[in-house]
Length: 625
Image (cartoon, rainbow, N blue to C red; front, side, top):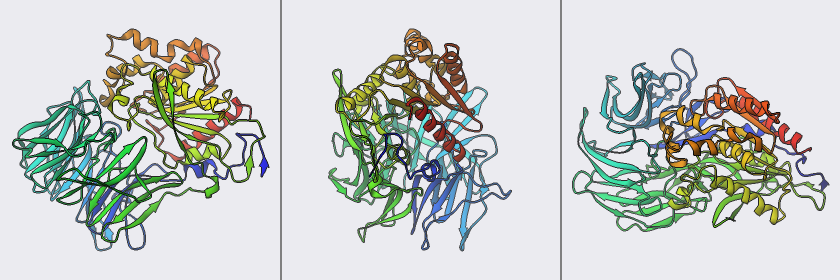
């Protein structure tokens, strides 16, 4: 073993290694094949298909030679942007938002053909049934942004408007026989995790008939049809996102809980998709989380009996079911994400793909410890990763620098799954605390709502208390503590640096320095999000000013690195410029890096690598390593 100071250990993970992975999302099953979407290192979304000789790319290039980039910008975040039935695949394209169709002929796929008009409409949440694609459409018009349910005819290209009675709609799911449609909807100032309405209606090719509300006054999400007569869905009416069944949704609509439990059977719907899948007429395939860890199993529709399937993988994505198989994106603490397929008849687990870039041996991987710490009269949760190395140790009597990770949202959560990014730091001798502060999901409705009107207060208390907790245990050096986060997490970074002295460095990626600017200049989906987190604007203008870091730079306690995309429609670049100029004017230690062509998050490999290199250099300088 070699004695080397914490933070300077020789890591086998380079910046390129940390970024050499595909991001896997939506999974679908069609016959004997499983499909999924990967966002490759160049930022393009491609559809992959399982085959005898391994995975193959379905979507390659358009007729004009441009490479296919499968993506939707509905709500800016998108979601399920492809669907496949009987070797016919439809998808949304980033280049123009249109729906395209490609079909398999022999051993190859046809060039994608545009189905919808080139009018700027965006499409997402696609379901293909016979010759119709049911989708959520988003139109950006002079009088505002309109979200509606449509049916797209693949033969004629006609786009039939079915529903636009609410500010937002999601999960338009036709019944197996095609005679009914279910969906959920909500209006400003609500978000889909605060209050929605589950609806159903009779369905023709041209209209919805006798639309009705099945469940409301809660977060009611993820509908799926159980045959032509019943619905299953998720609701937090009882304090947790639990599974319910509705019998006769077009008639008496009798609703009952299937499996009451202190567990969450859904994640917050930042992107579209249903958390439930139908296995057969008797069972649902479900996933649930408790204390940040996801499980997989089946739930009996008759009585709600739950059976867990132990696969060695946590399902991080909604589950696909069909043809005697179940597939999902799986995670585990010691291995990169993979598309996992279960053959139910053989009881066999098969990995269809694994993300590349895993350059670590088992003795180099830091395994997280689930931790909970007191915060005044409350508590907060997270995962602690100790510095780990096979051949390096630190001098006796020293403690490692700490990197505190703050997830975005803030209505979101972190998990204990393997992360190249985390291991990049732990193999260098850093400790990492990945925080699920109050307001995070996975711990019940009360914990999620504990951030209501308290954003910029409760989350700050939680991250600062987490640092004290680890310091008291002797696990970190409290004089070398960095905090980093993106979007809403970036706000927590800036707020923490101006409201506490717990941190000695901060990195904000497309974070928020001025809440008033965000309240008046952001996209439709989050336009009223702050009503619940802070209060209505301008009625609570004084609270916005008090919670905005831009107004408290005289208290700034540490150097700051600001990273921002120039085309961010969620957090405008003007916020980063404003924060940089104000800190610089006061003589603060600040740097701003703007990335052309980037939006809310990094798509380009060169951006991800450059930002990580700058972050490493920043900590090295500030901590004197």
